[in-house]
Image 1 (cartoon, rainbow, N blue to C red):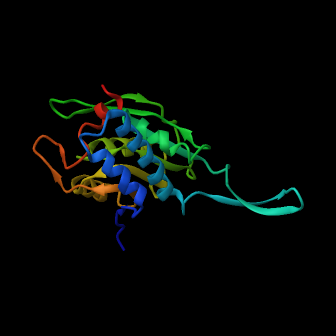
Image 2: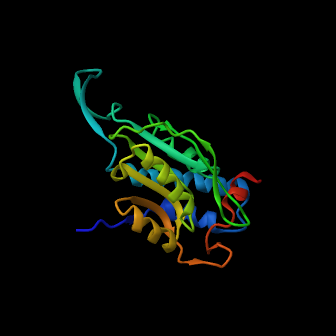
Length: 216
């Protein structure tokens, strides 16, 4: 059976709430950034709650020993924020993944020809086969930025079955592109916006996430 891209839009009230705040053009920049941080937190929660490696242990409690379950720190977890806007999602995601290693990956898109260039690459030379990877990219519009990111991690040995992509808004165009080349992926998003205009803007989308989150 052929693999099929798995896209999850969690039915969580806080995800819906913060998406609504982010959608509103009247939301102040500082509150918009808070909304993206919170979406990073809750989408990460949804993406990892059945995925994080667990280990059983026994500890000494106040009155007796107790059997407990912990996240297995021996299994490497990597979080890759795609800069700049991935840094905002990272603020929320990192509160849930304190043991993860952070690898920054900076991409810039030319406003004239949409050519994408990498200006910062902190990815390791090689991922171990057991490394679980979370990629943070707030918007999947044309899909070119995430395709560039995936190409880089595949070259470095990443197992795409162990990859989770977290994005606030995705489009069918990006999903189709991903499904053709990387159908084993799992994507967690707050919404799927159907329309992209001739200028590449997602409708209704979030506007310019970078400007709204950073004020520049």
